[in-house]
Length: 88
Image (cartoon, rainbow, N blue to C red; front, top):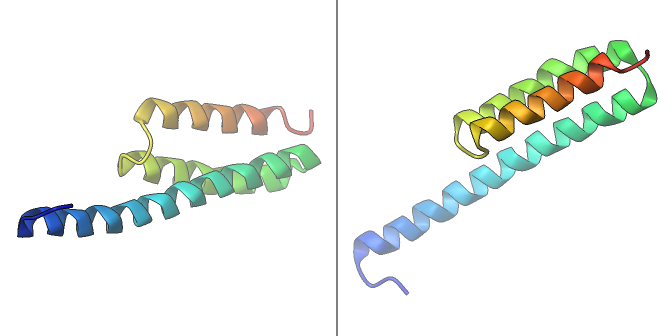
């Protein structure tokens, strides 16, 4: 347990940041799953519409250091390859 005033404040700050990070991470994963569902259904137009939304979520997570930039690049590549292979 923290004793100093500073340590107690850091605990409060870290908890707020953890909740924000968890929400953004969850949103990113949800958008990625939506994209994969659309790709699985074979609807290329809908997949192309969903792709920028998914990529934007991944970029935002990487910008805020919720995921590593290489992990973000890998996820974006997976998303783009999925859409490229959709409906062909």
